[in-house]
Length: 220
Length: 337
Ligand SMILES: Nc1ncnc2c1ncn2[C@@H]1O[C@H](COP(=O)(O)OP(=O)(O)O)[C@@H](O)[C@H]1O
Ligand SMILES: [Mg+2]
Image (cartoon, rainbow over all chains, first blue to last red; front, side, top):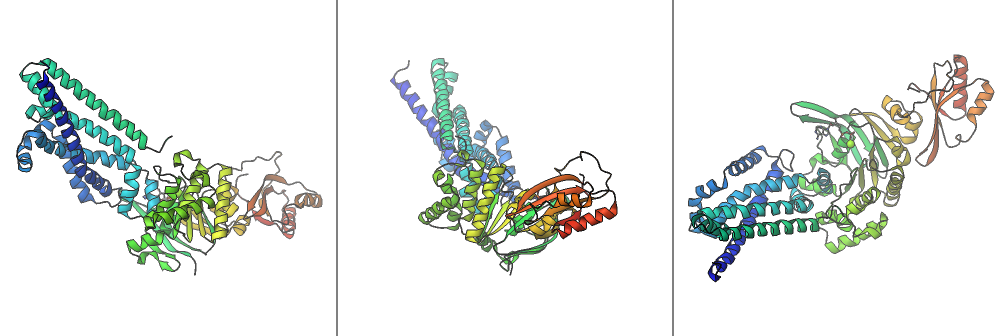
């Protein structure tokens, strides 16, 4: 039953899962990081408070985050088709994953930046730093550990969501689990995929925690 | 022309409908090369005052002139360049925790666009100035409070400023470390000719290093002048309170029936003369010493004493006259003692 065909399929599933998870994390950060910085900067206590911009960003983030992922997945089918050309498969799944992740990432980034000591920012201002210099040379540097931890949590979350997208033909391990475990009652294959998902999750989590500690110079 | 001129400065904060007047109509002139203390109780407005000097806080009314240039006339960009001439250090040091010592010191130079190699050479010089050559690669978390403040001083000096603002720079440090940081500031003032503004709530910091002092009370300038003079004869209540402090709480051993208390300040030449014992011998009448203390004011020994005078007013007057003739500053004292 675990013939080479099944094993090949599982290996392909691992590859697809990693591709979707890491791909959506990466693209999610391309959108979410600037959005998070924007939220931080325009917040009433930020570098350049702006009620309107903050209000809009805040609203969009809250709206998207309040839609359950599965519903978002279905809602976005036309949009996904427009961008990728089809609505199934791992590349297509990245689209809703990114849309779901970006506002989440923005929030995580915003809260990481909020943790940076106001005194350090004040010191940078006193040195004559511009807002851009403060963002890139102070905030992102001082918050790096927290940002890294946030990215680890986000990756874990997207791993779970990528598996969930298997229910609508998203590809990857989740897809295999649904197809074999749910439709064909091949529980053993489902168990193997679940174990693999757990293992991948653990690896991401531990690697992330390890790296976060490694780059942190605050306590030693 | 004064190096820093604060003219009729008023700062009002508005928070959720109600207003806080942090500073009201404060005017001060700080000369080049001075060590100028600004002292006041917590919440008096000292931090707000010093933060307007580099325009981290914009005045609600009034103006700040640095070398005759009104900061309100500068664009944002010009202001940022101007700030390189005004270093600042803080109570909590505010070092970049994720950067090591040398990178912290290089940071203002990086901001200013100095080449990395040049910046590192300058940073190494500064490490020598603040006596931390062996800590170049250490991270702030590995340093003591005093060492962190030394790094902060080096960092503040990196761009060769002509002014150094210190906001409660020694308030988080123990007395010995405070002394060493104050010594360093004095040294920097003497060797580099930098004008230093020291914000503090501790009179001992002012008397230790400052030449001039301004007393801020409740957002207003209560008194200002040479530290010597103000220490000898404070005229405002705020100054009196800061100088004599709330720490005096002596009850006389044997209570004299006394109405009048005086505070006398010994100067250098009189400090070691037995003025009091001579006085007692001369007048044959006891006085209660309620408090006695000596301090180093700007490098000169200064002693202060609070005396309870005898009931007899005529004798009291004669005693005061006698003390004044002997070169002591005498003032009535109204505080609790
Ligand atoms: N950004 C601010 N917003 C509102 N109120 C402020 C702000 N900064 C200072 N204040 C108020 O101004 C007063 C003076 O504060 P501050 O200058 O920090 O005093 P100090 O440094 O002498 O302790 C206080 O009442 C404080 O609450
Ligand atoms: Mg303060």
